[in-house]
Length: 94
Image (cartoon, rainbow, N blue to C red; front, side):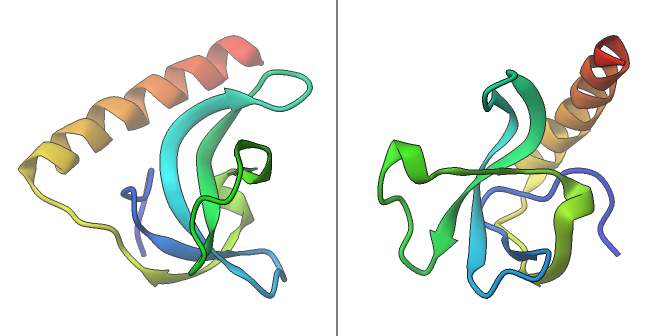
């Protein structure tokens, strides 16, 4: 199983949703409370429709991974830094 943040471009299912979601960004702050989220996503296969239709969600909400986004040395280095940064940010929120 994949640990930490998934790469951008990954396609997942959130909970019992019928639509798939493609990850478009990581470590996002948003929503009414300005909460920290693991991801922002867009519906798949439609993609970006409107800024108001971006989906904010966390790793623990992912029920299935359909595809992993592109991974190379640059993405792996980014993932290591992002995983550490989001863990530190979560500690300060608690």
